[in-house]
Image 1 (cartoon, rainbow, N blue to C red):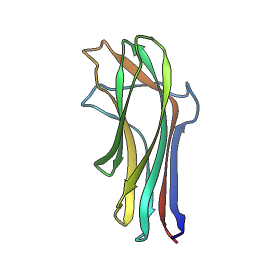
Image 2 (image 1 turned 180 degrees about the vertical axis):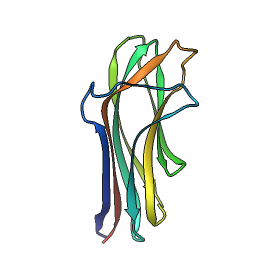
Image 3 (image 1 turned 120 degrees about the vertical axis):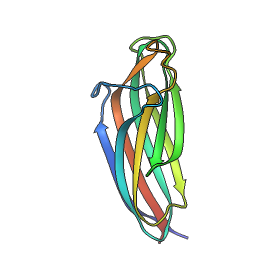
Image 4 (image 1 turned 180 degrees about the horizontal axis):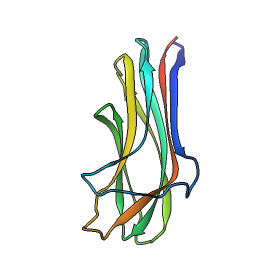
Length: 140
């Protein structure tokens, strides 16, 4: 059966490295990075989500946890670590698929948190790029 894009949205707070400087909070505190809404028709099979988060170590060897939410439900997580290199940076890119999405308006968001702060021995900042997109895919 043929598929088509039924809805699409994007949140792009920063399109380049160095465009931001947001300190990553230590767990259990999180920082919302981007969000958008999709209108999900009845014939939607799934939602495809993609994102990129650029971040840097500002102290120690930080490990960050990135989460995607649909509303308040976590639907995807990934981690990233920088080893003993101050001001080293990396861009984490990810793809996720959300199946069996209820029809109606749905809110998607991504958050970040530092999982190993050890007091303040490990620190990091979101520096960009920061992009988040979603497509509702369904039957024609």
